[in-house]
Image (tube, rainbow, N blue to C red; front, side, top):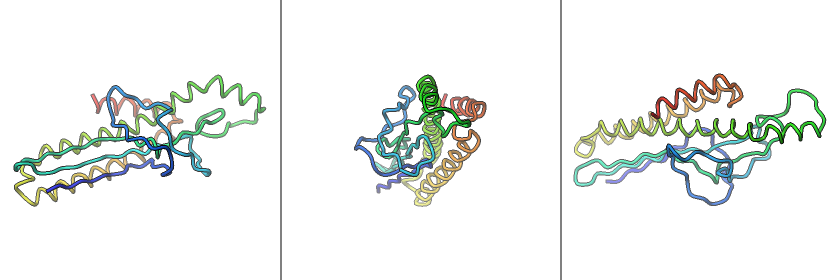
Length: 196
């Protein structure tokens, strides 16, 4: 018996982009600006969007449950807009075009770092959810012997997907999509503690 599920988290982007395989979450590999290969939608209001997936599969081999759960980032469906000034939108006051360009150049690196950190935490939240599913799977040792445990596997994945989507939305809401530095730092510390 082989069952597979692919769960798409919030933060989905357009389906266009260059073909590149998914990037699996790693404690040493952080997202970079060049990972965002998708096309920016014409009506996009955000500075970037990440498509993050949870891939869960399981099967019975010799009566034992063999399961895999991983958080992945889809470069082809994730996009990044090179914004002028603030990476989160339009400047709050009227300034000249030259001043906007100068401000954009001087703060571009800082803005990119802030935005990348925000998107990385979305990815980290997905990894925390993947770990929850792995722990639930580890507790279902009789899944291959008891058909009701297969239903429990499906339920565990569905519950984790719902929780992940709610968590991703709450993260964006509480951090103002990364513009609230204090809330962003609190989330960064909270998620880092979950992953350590």
